[in-house]
Amino acid sequence: MTLTDDKPAVQITSLNKWYGAFHVLKEVNLTIPSGSRVVICGPSGSGKSTLIRCLNGLEAYQQGTVTLGTTRLGDNARETAVARRQTGMVFQSFNLFPHLTVLSNCTLALRRVLRMPRKEAESLARHFLEKVRIPEQADKYPAQLSGGQQQRVAIARALCMNPRLMLFDEPTSALDPEMVKEVLDVMTGLAQEGMTMICVTHEMGFAREVADQVVFMDQGSIVEQASPMTFFSTPSHPRAQSFLNTLL
Ligand code: ADP
Ligand code: MG
Image (cartoon, protein in one colour):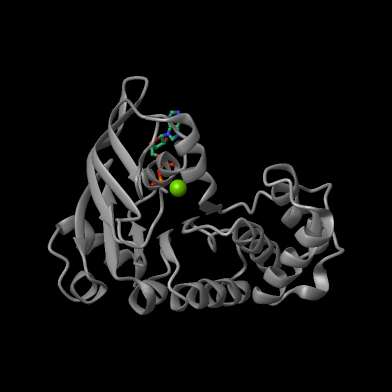
C-alpha cells in the first residue's frame, strides 16, 4: 500500500534529531495531505534539508515517527523500501551521473531497480524528457547542458519512477537567474496535475502561486505554518517577519 490518496502523504510526529550533541530537529510535527503542496522556508542552517532528508531515508533520526501513506518508516523493511521508491527527490546540485547520458540517467533506476526492459525504459524516459521540455537533449551528457536543463533532467529522472510524492531541496538555488523560471514552470505544471510536493525554496512567487501551506523553520523548529496569504500578509512570528523582510 503505502502512499494512497485517502491517507496523508506524510505525517511527522515529535521528530527529534541530533548530530552528535547538536539538536538539529526539535519536536517537529507536520501533516501533509495527499495532493497538497507545502513550501518550507527559513534561514540557512535551520534544518530544512535535514527534515526533508528524513522523509526519504537519507537521514536517520533518534526520536519520533515519519509515516508515508500507510507506512511508518523503519517498521518494516520491505514496506519502507516501497515508500521510499514512491518518493522522488530533487537536490540543489542536480546529482546527475556525469558519465551517463541524459537518457541513461533517466533509465538507470527503471532498469536496475524495476528490471524494466531497455526499450520500455527508454520510451518512458523520453516521455518525461518531453514533459520537462528537453526531449532533444536525450543523448547528451550532463556537462553539455545548462544548469536549468540539468535540473529538468533530474526532475524527469525522478518522475520516471512514478512517485506519489516529490521532495525538492532548493532546486533553483544553484541556477543562474535566467534559468530559474524554466525549472519553476515545470514544478508548477506538476503541482497543477495534483502531485503531492514538498519544496524547500525561497522562491516566494512560487510559494504564493502553488503552495497550500507555507512552513517556516528556525533553529530546528517549525515556528510558523500558515496559508501563503496569511504567511505573507500577517506572519505572526517575529523571525518569520524579519526573514520575509530580507527577501524584499
Ligand atoms: P538548512 O537546509 O536549513 O540550511 P541543514 O538541515 O542543512 O539546514 O542543517 C541544519 C544544521 O545542521 C546546520 O547547522 C548544519 O551545519 C548542521 N548539519 C547539517 N548536516 C550535518 C552533519 N552531517 N553533521 C553535523 N551537522 C550537520
Ligand atoms: Mg538546505
